[in-house]
Image (cartoon, each protein chain N blue to C red):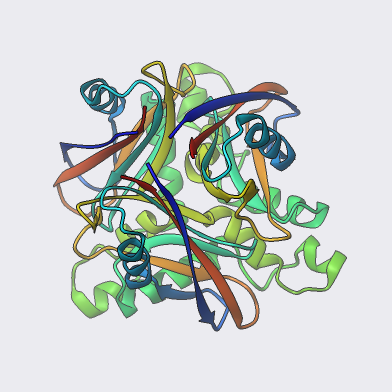
Length: 139
Length: 139
Length: 139
């Protein structure tokens, strides 16, 4: 059973920028030549996350608002007091959402709902060029 | 190393219905014939999630209450304003909890604590018939 | 493709003790002899979780504070009323953070950011001796 690691880049605006990466994951699957198996999508770094949503502007807005309530950007963070980065809220958000997501695929198709997309969430407090990895194990 | 994809159905009542699916995951493992490997449990759709809890009525109630505080059902959601679905809160909850969960198994036994069960959480605002997948890679 | 399951123990102080286990995960990888594949890190039990953070004392403190806000320890929990354990908040926190984390590795190196560590979060209300598992599938 082969193991294939693919990588792609995503330019983000930061500040909980939520970006649909489903097509890029599908392209990685296709390039791998593996038909059935498990795809792990992950982002390198401690201020970004991976999840799934129905990717439409209403849900995108609602999720950003919810994350702002859960880990507000306008309260003091110890990380900022120590390092002056100003992105303490970004670190907390990333730890809560999680930086990897696993999804099976079968006959080349991701096991997702019709209205379910894989998203990169960039929580940092500035634009970033993110490395997203898709690792495929299967047969 | 084989890859096996199993599926089962769960009827839910929605509104953060939390259902123990551990036995169904174990049955899928057993049917697969694979003895050691990784099981990925996932639910298709953008208004449900998978996690683990000690499945007793107190924890179930506490988790429902916590999720209601984190993403309240009684505040406005942009998704609802755009689409009228009334399940904006469901989408946010699902994105935060996550739609898949990975658990190793060894000699046919899931690596879980004694009081730890795998649960489907249906966040939608109506009863649903859910497709839950168990994908098994191993040997 | 082989499957290897490794285990190590971590003594915690409970109360959202957050412990860097990256080196122990790396040691498990190294012992497995597998060069490329997927590592699943999981903790047995329903009052602990696994995630990633930049492991420095500011972020550790910020994440503890955020989790206290999300699932406060000073409100009533049904679990405690039923069982008297006093760790209702621990169960809720664990379910929200998640008990497993998957990370690819390639040529023996974990696919993580430079400042990204794998952490065990022990949410229980007492010190615990935790069993953490690293399962490796690959080639």
